[in-house]
Length: 326
Image 1: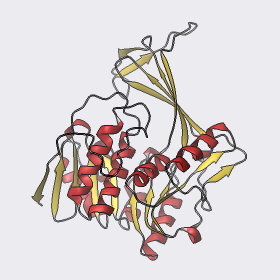
Image 2: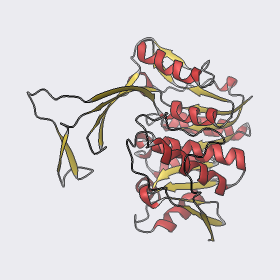
Image 3: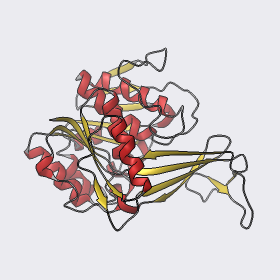
């Protein structure tokens, strides 16, 4: 039996860092800033780095490095990117028998353009990782204590069937919905969250799903918690993270270390939280490992290099967790 099986995407990630990547303010941009690439010119690249990523792949590495028996279910192409994805998992001792090899689509790719200041723009090709069908997950082979379900490309029917199946078979579930799932709205997701043991989103996502104004953080967390069977968690960038178990709010800050690259920080936090919950049995321990994992990942390029190993202490200080009655 596995401790955790992760479900979602696996990708090939290519980082291009250049001092020639420039940005400019743009109030109409989602981030208020645009990356500017002049057409018709050649742009020098200072560094190129090949890594692997994807929510399911990244999370599986966290669980393996924490000493948990893990397997990954994802969809890759029969190409060099797919082989790299499998090799990176097997190197960590992760079972890859359930990975599907797509003969029609290439492995998903992410090309990350990184400025000298560490800001990034990501070009995404979903490829095989965007083809999630109902038969994607072999439920008869899911011999596990936990299912960690990351983005499924908006396939809420598959997400629902997995959570319902796990609920029926007494398997704990962690749901980390991606943008495409969140776009389906609360009406589609609320019945799914109601059967999940852990649901994790960032503050903006949670505000959208709960319908509560972004500024009312505690109300957002509480509503999220009420939507789940177990624990609701929201991440809030430099402001740390908050969890709720219907009785208490739990708050943790961040280490405040400057980021080399933020790719995979969300995956590291979510998988760190679940790994901490499995190992410690409490929310305080889960938040501590999640914060350490996410903070250390941003010290390196790629989503996996900084993932924390069991007994490793990447930071001298231990972040305190505050607990407050609802």
